[in-house]
Image (cartoon, rainbow, N blue to C red; front, side, top):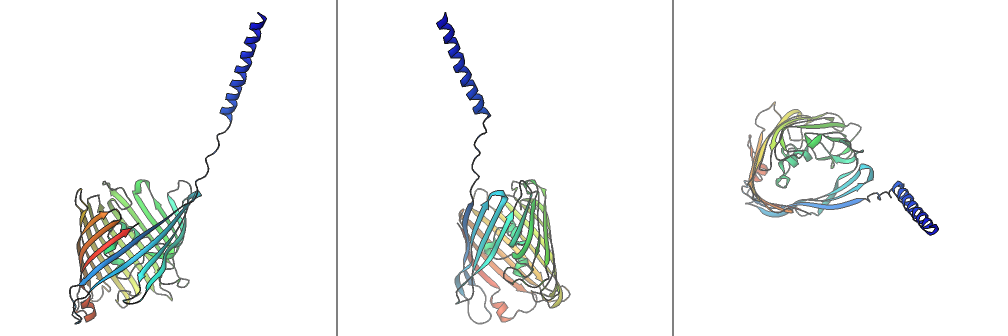
Length: 354
């Protein structure tokens, strides 16, 4: 009997120790997972083309040439605490026989605190309009947007900005304070430009990106040139984008002390642009069309320029797109020989990414 009691006591002690150890193990805090390290990625984007000049009244005959229009190398770093940095090099031909020119296009730090819908940027940053509209059009490989092609906006500038968006990008916007001279125009003087864009999706489609759906978008840019003088832009755009179809109509009003598009002093100008893209169902083929009408001075006549673009693209792979198109520019007034010589072109263009 004495042996049985000892045995029972021994078993009870062992069970008590095991149970206590289990409780201690459960109470001990788990070892925290190590914080994720920095993530650095490098990517590239390039546009190359073959151009055949359809008309040349200057007497040099039809020209044809191969060229690289643009190449970008981008490095992005993502760090803890919602911090992100970006540097993008812009490589562009500097002349018919000259070397390539390399310059900074973007160089900024961004911070998104916690789960905030706002991102704060400082440095050489995106301006509010062009990056957004290029994403809507999706064919920057053909050339710049109408408002940039006529000299009224640039895609990057030195300054500070705030990006914001609502759930699923129903609302998407950006506000910046920048020097106003663009990333290739220097720092300018004490005068600054204030720019803002707000885009609202009023109807859903199967594209819920920041440019998808039926959207109404507005932009303002108010500023002064270096040395003084107005530099104001106002843009309104209505767009529809789904996985199969993109349609957009845009109107821009401009006010400049000296018009960059050649409208003269204190010119009030306008730019009208309409474009569309049709993606063939279950096919890599798409059809694009666009018309741009630029009037550098609405107070005078015979100075409008109208550009027609039409083409067919083929998505060879996610990293390669090919576009065949025609680009024809007409003038309301009689063009100079130099203008007439470059206004009608046929192009074979490629966009490559890695």
